[in-house]
Image (cartoon, rainbow, N blue to C red; front, side):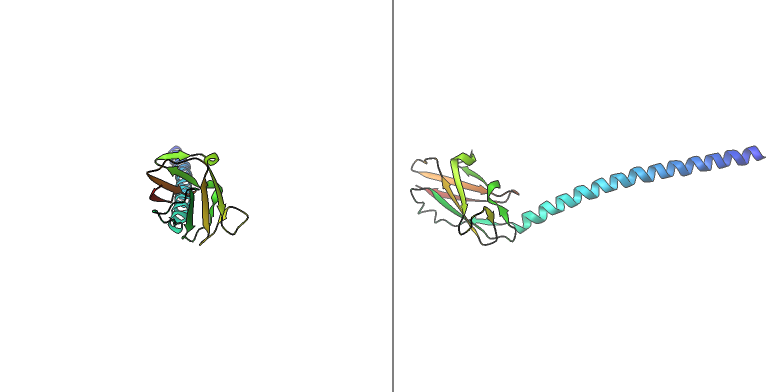
Length: 145
């Protein structure tokens, strides 16, 4: 009879060890999912707090190709991480200069205006510009030179 009790204890111990292992694996997976969700939630929150608008008059683009973009969101942006697309073509940072009006750095706070001066020539005619922030929020404007 003692043999049956010992085998029951061994089976019980094995079941407890297996349960602990399963709980450990599940908790690691739950932590991974939680971390991923919190990162996604943070990115989504930043995107929802970000909004920009190109404030040029599309009919009056000056010959010096200066564009003004206002941060109308509540999230501070980094001007160094701003992308510019002209007529569907990505422009590298050597094709334009960026400054934030009234600031010495390129931190683009709420209500600040970003000044984008294109260093490349644009032929006369119809064009479009898209300005994209560091977290993917963008504004686009059609204009004529």
